[in-house]
Image (cartoon, rainbow, N blue to C red; front, top):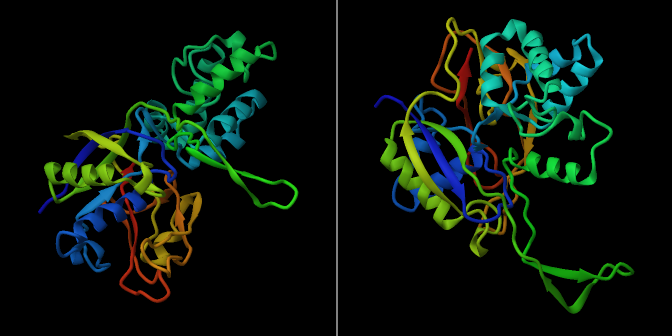
Amino acid sequence: MSYQDFKVVVAPRGPFLTPLMADTLWGHVVCRLAEEGDVSDWVTPENARPPLLLTDVFPEGWLPAPAMAASTAMRQDDMVTAAITRRALKQGLMSDELVTKLLAAPDNMEAVLAEAVRETREAKRCPLSLAPEPGCEASSCPALSSQSSIEDRRRCAQLSQSWRVRPPMHPSRHLAVSRQNLTALEGQLFDLPDTWLGGRWVLWARTTIGGSELHRLLGLVGETGYGARSAVGKGHFVVETVDAGPNAVAPVTPSTRLMTLSSCLPATTAWSRQALQYRLRVKHGKRYLSSEFIKRPVAMFRAGSVFQADGPTDFVGSILTGVHATTPEIVDCGLAYPVWF
């Protein structure tokens, strides 16, 4: 069965303790399927056509900043331009409009970023993220003006939270601790309300199982909960739409490079040596409902990493084995949804 691409929109229904990342979400989907039947096709490293590829989950309108942009910022001649660019790249995400422009001109990223910074100085973009039309005045921007007030800084901090994948979370129950001997104080529990950002989050999926089945499986994950402390109400979301549609970024022809939209690990070291610019993430996974819950750490390429490759392929990376010391059948997802440019 051929692959189909889908754009999935989800909405949080509570706070999250675990970032919404593709490999962890893939694991939740496989666990739900394992309760219903055989999942050997999903977890077999030799499968040349994995049933499901997922991107990380991003706030609507945002994508990971290409790793190539970081070195581009270092080559900027103008100090202010370089400073604003580096500050924006620290956020990890950029507006999808700017990412599309950068990937469409991979050999001219300096000019694209310089133009974005010029618009920033005209208050058409936010200097913290280079997002278009932030709705702020340049004179009240903490990053552009030394005359900004405390209220301006608070407004800026609230705005910057809107593009963060992991919402802020305050546990409901806190335990007071003695600072003298670091022991819990008996009867000193106190309440704080849970808070989280609303809005819509987006991921893309490339799958052979069809849109309705994808909607059902992701809906099960959102209903039962994702990540840490899901049993007490954390990590819940609803799937609003699953629409067949375009890729996250339209591919550029001819395509000789790719950017990943999730963490991945290739099956061969030869592919790793073709990395042009990359970020690393060390994953410390855990196995639930077991006394031997610690998995081996896995170093993976983070979303936004850029590689040189020959021709477009449907996916990159592999299913990882040997991630648990005593249970060899446990695997991890090192597959990534690529954007070719």
